[in-house]
Image 1 (cartoon, rainbow, N blue to C red):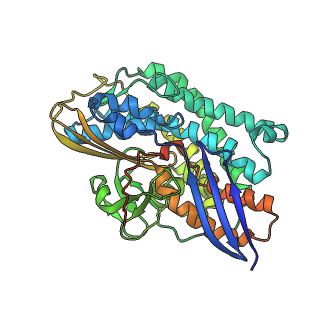
Image 2 (cartoon, rainbow, N blue to C red; image 1 turned 90 degrees about the vertical axis):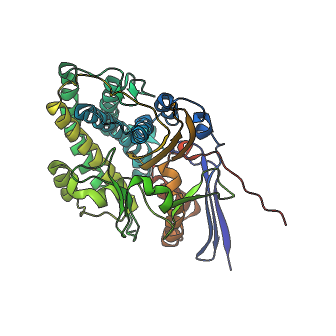
Image 3 (cartoon, helix red, strand yellow; image 1 turned 60 degrees about the horizontal axis):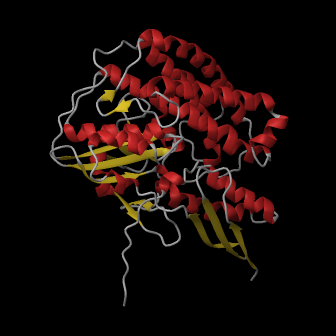
Length: 429
C-alpha cells in the first residue's frame, strides 16, 4: 500500500505560528495533526494577583487583531461578579466598538488571508497586481473599522479607553457624526464584497456540524446571550465549565476543547449565522439570500461569504447605533468589589470567547480562565481535514498541500491567541 506524508512546517497567512502534519495510507487518511507550537504566553498566570481593573488592558494584549473581544469578555465577567448594571448608552457604545472590530478583522481575513486561496495567488500582494480595485476597497474598509475602534477605544490596536463599568471617556453625538459618513461608504463596499465573494469557486463540502454560539433574544450576538447549539445545547454562560472541557494534546501547545456530551463543535461566523440568521438586519438577510445562502450554512469554504455578510451587518448596525445614540451622564458605572466569581462569553470575530475570574473581597484576581475560539475549533479543523482530503487526494502534492492549508484558513485561526499555560499531569509506571 502506497503511503505519503504532507508536512507544512510553517502555515502561511494565518495569525501566529502553526504547522500541519498529514499521513496518508493509500486513499485513506491515517493521521492528521494541526500543530500549534508557539510557546505558552502565561496571560492567565499574569492576571493572578492583579486588580480586577487591570484585566481589560492586560487581556487586550492577547491579540492585536481582536483586542476588543478580550476587553469585552473581561469587563462583562467582572460586572457579572460584582452585579453591576450598565447604562443602556454604554451598552450601545460597546456594541459599536465591537462593530469596528468585526469590520477590520473580517476584512483582513476575507481579502488578505483567505481570498488568495480561491483565486490562486500566493498572497494578497500578488492578488493586487490583477485585482487592484478589490484590494484598494479592502484597505479602505479596514480603515473604517480601525476608525471606529480609534474613536471609542483611544487607538486602533490594543485600545486603552475601555474600563470595567464602561469607558474612561465617551464621545458626544457630534463626534460620532463623521464616523457615520465613513460607515455609509463602508456599507456599500461591504454589500459589493458579499456579491464578490459569492462568485468565488467553492468545493462541495457540506458537513453535519454542531454549531455553538451566543444567542440573544432580539439581537445578532456580540456581548450577551445564552450559549446554544443546533443539537440541543441551551445554557447560561456560567454553566460553561460544566458543559465544555479542555484537554492537553501532546503535539500542540493549545488545549483542545470539546463538549463533554458529544465531542467536537464549531464556533465562529458559520455558527453565529446558522443559529441567528433571523437576527441579522434585513439588508444583511437580503444580501445573504442574493448570494445563494440559506438560513444555515454548513460548507466551511463558504465562510468567506458569511464573514462578508457579517461585515455588512456590522456597518448597518453601527449606523443604527450612531443614529440612536445619546451621550450618557456618566462614562462608567460605580464598581463595588466583593468576593465572587464572574463569567462572560462574547463573540470575537473568530467565535465564542470565554472568560472566568475568581476575585477576593478587594477585587484582586485569584484565578483566571480564558478559552479563545481557535482552541475550541481545533478538533473540528482536524476532523474537516480527515473528511476533505479524500476528495482531493488525486491532486498533485503542491495543490493537495494548498487545499489542506485552505481548509485550515476556513476557520481564520488566531494561533497566538490559542496558546495556554499548560498544566501537565505526568503519570509514571
